Image 1 (spheres, rainbow, N blue to C red):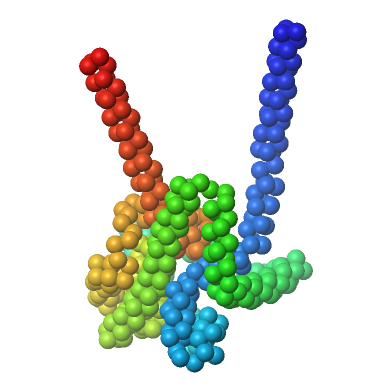
Image 2 (image 1 turned 45 degrees about the horizontal axis):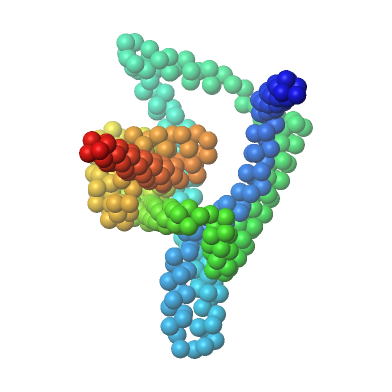
Length: 394
């Protein structure tokens, strides 16, 4: 009987190993389909993620408005404090968008149109500069003129005709359908974010009761701690970066206007937007502004602009941003560069923006893990010392 049981165990273990190998092979062989399915699922759930993010950003101001409405003595208003707070927040958001569309965007669009019209002249100026460079210059060694000439040989008429082919027209129609899908996603995002803000107490209560039911007391307390850390890091970072971008954009636009820089509003807006992306954003924004100024105002004005922008960026990095953000994100520049590069590669602009707080949160987890492990080791060493002392005494 023992021999038969041994054989059965042996064959069963081989069978389980074979099934496991088949599952692993099929999983590896179907990676493309699995990633495609995950991608489709992420695209499907993206409006809900964005709704949660929007509700997360608007949560604190909504809470402040709700407290103000509850202090009003009229019962009708006090009872509907939450609904009124959410409505007030979205009215402010809509007014902000209306101001952007009606005041800021027209000024920006004029600058963009003027810049687009001037691009051929800037192109010819740049080409003439490169042609007149000596043969031992870097531009000649890199064969920049050859690359430009190859680009100029492209037959524009053939390119336009290729755009009008049936396959490309179907792509354009697909693009229109995608735009309709984006509009629908925006609608879903706004509606879901409103419901999240209105029903936030019920959502928090359900999550709290669920975690208490499935987790131990220690696990629940740890989760609550990390939730508070996550809330603090993400909210402070996102709100601080948005406020900082507005301040930097305004200051940069004013400085450029004083210097008589062409497209001052457009370039200031660009630098403000790019400043949202940590570390790299400011470098890209300043670089584009300086290059455009070289063509519109000359080398000296571009150098002065570069100097002024570097000073403003230093003021922002050392005074404005720390005052707004505080000291909640104490992470090195190496981690910032890694976060922006890694998450930007996989999640594009949103990843570049949210990569830094994610890394900051992971840093909190790692530090807590290290501290707990060190405490456990110290406790074990103390127990060993106590046991050794007791053995010596005995």
